[in-house]
Image 1 (spheres, rainbow, N blue to C red):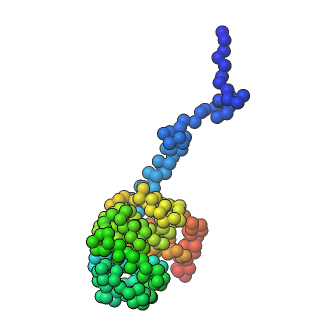
Image 2: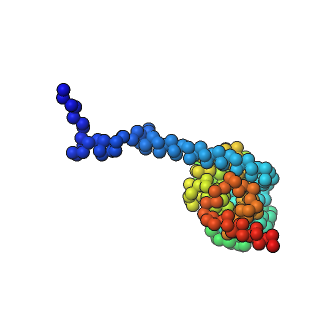
Image 3: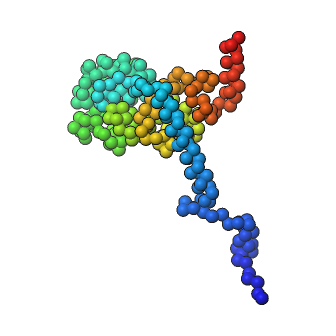
Length: 268
């Protein structure tokens, strides 16, 4: 009886080249086991994110956008001004700003030097003045003086990126199209293990995949509040954090020991 020859590739048997078993691959071309592991990891993050979202809702039920505004246009202007500036300072500036130029048409016609003087204390005032003038002119020319309600149209306006567009859509129109990622949201999301990226766009992508859509708008407001009161950048209050059992404390090596040490010193 003749023994069938084993197929070889380059003088080596297929089993020798790939091991005793050939890895099965899924539709993506990756090994099927790797695909299942990836799905399991994402499922775990989704469960974790949903639990965190519910906990944050109980902790900060009244968290909201801290910029003062009476219309989507005012929110759009205030958000542009908030770059590299505190919301408190922006709120002080916009009182006078909107009293002088209450509509896109009014602001589009403003003299650049006057506009710069009014917004000077927000920093980068020349660049921000150019953005405001360009944005207001675009609103008049393309949108009949109205703030558009799609992210595609918003990001085409001068001075408007995805973060600003998400703020306007979420807090101005109540539309959950994405997740606002600022310094606090990005930092805490990485600490919670929900993203490993520094790029806000990549962090937003990870959060949209994990956080329930019904929490997208409030997620950023609540994380910002949590970051200001508990999860500070340099000395987080891990020992008093109500999210402690849900948080892997990524990037906080030794945080438990430091927290325990602070707690012990406080008891003396």
